[in-house]
Amino acid sequence: MYRAARPLLFALDAERAHGLAMAWLQRVSTSAALRTRLERANAVRDARLEQELWGLKFPGPVGLAAGLDKDARAPLAWQALGFGFAELGTATPEPQAGNAKPRLWRMPAEQALCNKMGFNNDGAGAIAERVARAKHDARIPLGANIGKNKDTPLDRAVDDYEACYGALAPHADFLVVNVSSPNTPGLRALQKREALGELLGALQDAAVAHGLQHRPLLVKLDPDLDDAALAETVGACLEQRVQGLVCTNTSVGLPKPAGAEGGVSGAPLRARSTQVLRKVADLTDGKLPLVGVGGVFTAEDAYAKVRAGASLVEVYTGFIYGGPGTARRIHEGLLPLLERDGFRHVRDAVGADRR
Ligand SMILES: Cc1cc2nc3c(=O)[nH]c(=O)nc-3n(C[C@H](O)[C@H](O)[C@H](O)COP(=O)(O)O)c2cc1C
Image 1: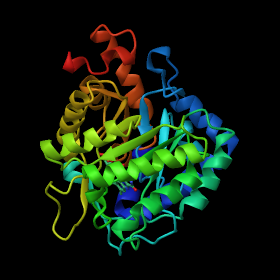
Image 2: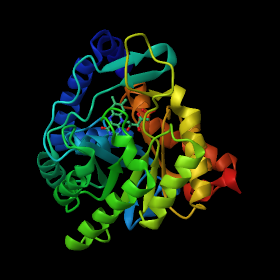
Image 3: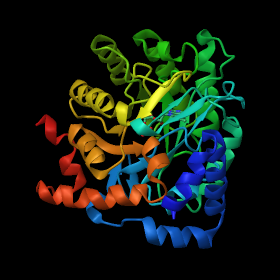
C-alpha cells in the first residue's frame, strides 16, 4: 500500500506529508482494532531477536529514532508497525515552534533528508502525559529524548534538562540526553567534558531526588566529533555512569542541496555513524549497551551496526523512504544473517567485528 501512497506523499511538501502520515499514525495509535490488525502483520516474534537491557524487555532490536514522533502523538502505532521500541521527542521544557520553514528537505537521489527543525514540540508536560497514557497498552519500551529550549541561555541549559527529566522520567522507560542536535545554537558544546559532566551529574542527582536511579539514562552523540573530542565526551559519560550511548545524530559535514540547511540523515550518514559507533564501542570496551542510528534502511545495514557494537538500532530516514513495513523487513532480514554467521541470538552478534 505504501508503494502506492509514497509518490503522492512525496509530491507534497515534506512537512505536509509528515503531518498527514502522523495523522494516520495517531489514528492507529488510538484504535485497538487497527493496532491489533497491523501488529499481526508487522510484529516479528522470534526469541533470537528478544533482548533484556537495563531490565527492559525489547521484543526486537529495531526501534524508532527520535524526532519522528516528537510529541508522542502515536506511541502505540510504533508497536503496531513492529518496532521493538520507540524514542519519542525531543522534548523541551516549554513548547516551542522550532525554526522557520522551510526546514525539511528530501534528497531522494541520495536516499537522505536534510533538516533544521529546531525541536518543534508541545513541551515536556504534554508529551509526558501522552507517554503516561500509552504505558498501559505498551509492550515495547517507550523512551523520551530531552533537550533545551532555544531561548534558554547555554549556561542555564542544565535547568531545562532537569525540568524535562522531572516531567518525563516518571513515565518513560528510558531517557536520552540530546546534546547533539545541530539545529539548536550551541547545543553541541554541551558535549564538552566539563559541561557534560555538570549536566549528567545534575541529572543523576535528579534521578536520586525522584527515586528513579533505576531509570536508564543514555546520551546521544553527534557524528562530527573528531577522535579527541569523541574520547573526551565518552569519558565524561563513563565518569557519570550513563547507562548507554546513542550513535549518532545527523551530520553537518555532508553535502546538501542548494538552499538546504541543518543536518543530513540517511544513506550518506551510514558509514560515518557506524564508524563513530565502532569507536565508542572500543572506548567503552563493549561494556555499555549502544544504540546505532544513521542510514539504516535494510537488515544488512542494521546488522552492520550490531556487528560494530550496537545492541539496538534505530531508524528515521529509512522509514520515510521504506514506509510502514520497514521494521518488519529489517527484523525478518536479520534472522538469516544471524543464521549465516552462526549466531544463535542477536546478542551474540553484538560487537562481532571487534573480536
Ligand atoms: C526531520 C528530522 C528530525 C529529527 N529530530 C530529532 C530530534 O528531535 N531529536 C534527536 O535526537 N534526533 C532527531 N533527528 C535525528 C534522528 O533521530 C537520527 O539520529 C538521524 O536522522 C540519523 O538516523 P537516520 O539516518 O535513520 O535518519 C531527526 C532527524 C530528522 C531527519
